Image (tube, rainbow, N blue to C red):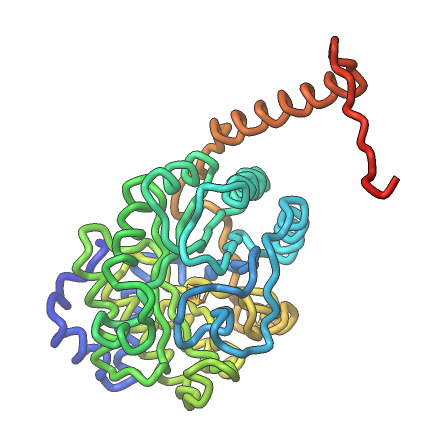
Amino acid sequence: MKINPEYNSKEKLLNLYNKPLLELVFEAATVHRKFHNPREVQMSSLLSIKTGGCPEDCGYCPQAARYHTDVEAHKLMSVETVIEQAKNAKNNGSSRLCMGAAWRDVRDNKDFDSVIEMVQAVNDLDMEVCCTLGMLNEDQAVRLKNAGLFAYNHNLDSSPDFYKDIISTREYEQRLDTIGNARKAGISVCSGGIIGMGEAIEDRVGLLWSYMQMENPPESIPINALVAVEGTPLADQKPIEQWEMIRMVATTRIAFPETMVRLSAGRTKMSMEGQALCFMAGAGSIFAGDKLLTTPNPEFNEDKEMFDILGLITKEPFANGEKPVSKPDEKIIERKRKEAERAAQIEANRGTKVEGFEPRKVVSENN
Ligand code: SF4
C-alpha cells in the first residue's frame, strides 16, 4: 500500500497533521509496525562530490553562487576520493551513500562520466548508491541506472505555491519532469522537503499532497528542518520546534505506509527524546557523519550511543529492493578508446621526420 486511501484529500491530510500529537504518533507507530521493522533504522551518508558555485537561487542553500556564505566552491571530487569516503562510511555502519553535486542540471561531459564511474565503484562496495545532481534527462537517467544507481534524489521542497517564494530559477514542473525521468529509467525515487522556511502548515501538507497525486509516489521521502545559514535569504528564519518535525514525520508515515521516511537535516537542534519520537512515528533512516553536504550534523559517536540507548539496529543495504547490476558504460568506453588512439598517434609522431619538410628559418628584423 503505497498510499493510504483513508487520507485521499488535502483536508483529511491537514486534519491528520493537526491531530493531538500523541494520538498522531500512536497512529503513525501502528502503521509503521505493519509495514516495517520498527527497530531498524538505515544509516546513510551524504557526500558533497562537487560543492558550491551553483547558479540556482534556492533561498535556503549556502551553495548558491549568488549568496555570500562561508561555503567554498570545489570542483568535482576524484573517483578515488569518493571510493575512500564510501569505504569509511561503510565501516561506520552506513549502507547507503548519497552523492550530491551542486549543479543546476547534469551535462554530458567528462564530469558526468566520472560520476558514472563513482556510481559503478560504490555499487561494487555493496552500498545503495543515491545521487542528487540537479535536473536530469531520460538518457542521463538510463546511464545512471546502467551504472548501478539505486536511487535518485530530487526534492520538491514544499507545496507548489510556497515553492515560488523560495526558488525562482527553476519551476516545480521541471522538478516533476526530472523525477519522471528517473522513474522511467527504473530508478527508485527519493524526494522530500524542508520545513521551517516560513511556510504554512497547508504548504507542508501540500508537499505531501503533490506526492499523493503521483501515479507512483517516492520510495523514500526525506524530511528536513531548515538549517538557516548566514548569507542566505532564509538566514533569519527562526528554528522550528522539534514537535513540528515529529508531526511531519508521523503524517508522512501514515500517508505513505510503505515509503522510507528519512529524518534528515536539522537533527542537531533535536534532543534524543525528540528523535526517539520520530523513530517511533516512522522515521526509518538518518544521515550519519558530522556534515550534511555543507551543514552540521550529529557526530557518528553520538548516533551510535543513541542507537544503543534506543535499542535500534542498522538496516542492511538492499533490504527494500534488489542490488542493481553495474554495466559497462558505452560512452566511457568510446571516450577512452579515442583518448588511447590520440595518445598512440602523438607517440608515433614524436621524433618522426616528415619527408621533404624543412623548417622555415626565422630571421629577426633586428639582425
Ligand atoms: S539546493 Fe541544489 S540546486 Fe538549489 S542552489 Fe543549492 S545546490 Fe543549487
